[in-house]
Length: 357
Image 1 (spheres, rainbow, N blue to C red):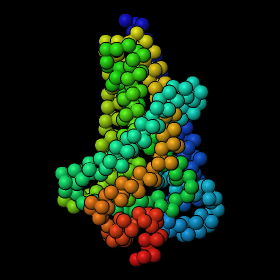
Image 2: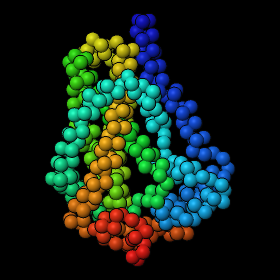
Image 3: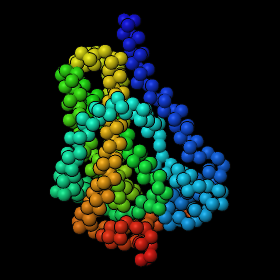
Image 4: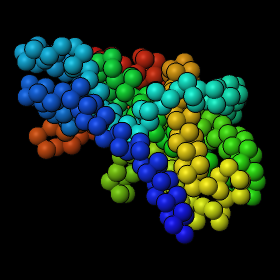
């Protein structure tokens, strides 16, 4: 009984170790972004632009002038703007040890990533080229009776660091999905080796599908719900549907595995709670390396093409308008800019749209 208690405490400490590492890293990140008074002053200026609903490019020259006034470098501007657009939370810093452990987990990540890349292209062909994703969007629109419109993204015109932070900001869902898959499959009455194999196969399928969907919806496309007075960006809609499953479900599965693990796991390697906790961390950091690879190989190379194709498909069905959604002295306004087809053809440039008005 005492040994079981000690094993449980040890396994909990092993699982909590990334949190102990993440907290000081998060404070260090906050300092690196900027906490000095002049840096906070610039942060407030950027926040006011974002609160108004205007893309940063609209006030790029004014923000640069404000930065010169308080002696901020362009690099510091990039950090502050990126932190406001894509803030990093504790869940992001939980993944940082993978940068240290990548020689250990890199081989496992490569075994999964190599077959994932062609499968990602296959899923893109199914969802985008065969218009399955647009068909799903049509079904959602018919069921909810929402309108589909376009609203320019606020990160248009942000400094260069923004793209890196956007990739890191996306990663927790991709990574925790791998852990979620592993915890689900570990319930199966199969050996430890088969648990890892089945988890890898299911993970490849889920991450491929979700990556394509996220790449397609990270655009100006937005659901407008007049009945409930809501405007829901498509990418936010996707994240809201994924979040509860991956987040809350992960906490439930981890706690249940710790409390009743020896009774519900069958593989000899995973029956021991300490060994199981170590395997959870290895899966977490392996999934992090896979997530980095997906960001580099898929999102940077194929993300723009997927997004443009999906927007064109939505345009052919709904012919939506792109609106400027802003706030001015407490008044909210939707100002029509141009049809979505023209927006996509102009390279999704807010400056071009503003010139044509």
